[in-house]
Image (cartoon, rainbow, N blue to C red; front, side, top):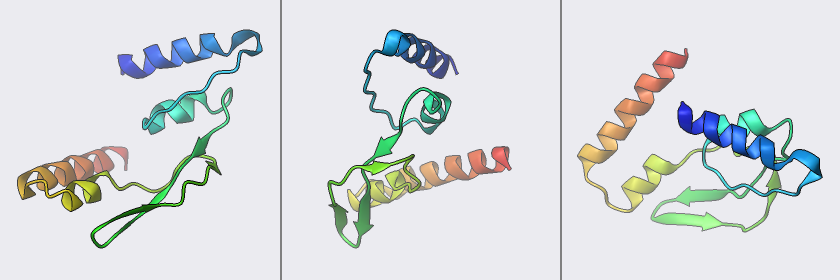
Length: 97
């Protein structure tokens, strides 16, 4: 929680006085908090069979797809890692709902 609060404070400070600031983050919570003062853009990719494909086109808005666990599978991480990640994700989803 402090990580988000600190980043939010710094990034809000940086855009004062019409400064141009570019930020790259994978943190959706931070992106949502900054959206009133920052314009959101993203790159997307498709995870397919044995790899992933990038179109290298910048798109507006917040990225809506997620693929981190699928990428772990593609890179051959042990099943225990994949299962742990999925269990954590399921528990977080249950907390939110």
